[in-house]
Image (cartoon, rainbow, N blue to C red; front, side, top):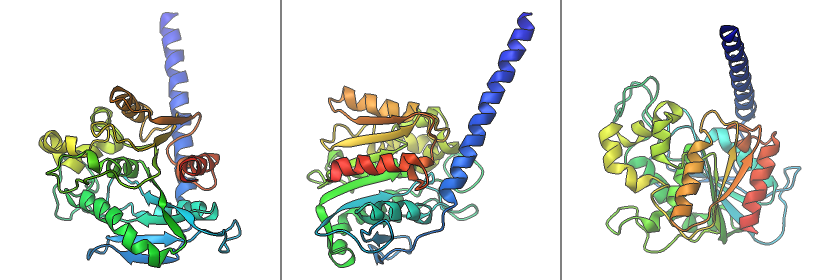
Length: 316
């Protein structure tokens, strides 16, 4: 009988796991199945082809230019485990969704890992494209944010830079939290800001927000170790880019996380929120039950409306 009971529990566990995987696949297909939405303007912040920002003007639900006066600016940093195949294209429907909610939107591209077979620092061995380029990925995010005040007046003249909210999904969530913490970096860092960035806040979506916990859980197939150049690079570089270390920031921060996320498990942002509390800072946590990784950026999902509301809470 004990063996039968154990087998029954194993079968039930397998069924639950299969259901979770099926839901994750369906959510991914939905979020990534939308047609790309072309921007209203594009500007370069450097000479590399990936050093560009797409801009979306606020519009009404029908797609026509909408709103009066100045609109808050939402800066979007896409995810994709810092890997080359995943560019800003997959979040253009999300950017358009935010624009239809009355926001001016800047969708930032940045250099990601070398495609499989290209030269580049491989970090830990693993199949597929390498995650990130060191230090170019971080150089680009810093440069893009620094360039926005000079680019926005021409690209989005209706945008109000005084009401800027930074958001990012998954790996982009890590980059968003990091970009908002550059003033916490040592003065000798090439990315250091002498004062905190002028942000209304950060809304991090299923962020890879604690790099140690992410390595422990092998998030995104070991992407964090690849990003930082393997075990040795992780030890040297982690404290310069780990949001869980660069605290407190003094900037309003909210994390939105799906409880059913299989890509970035809840334990990762939870660890970041706890680290912030230990540093004396309160980070908001909006935890969505029965929601996985991708609905947060899927205009067809209710979770995406929750994200827009969290951004609005800070922007307006």
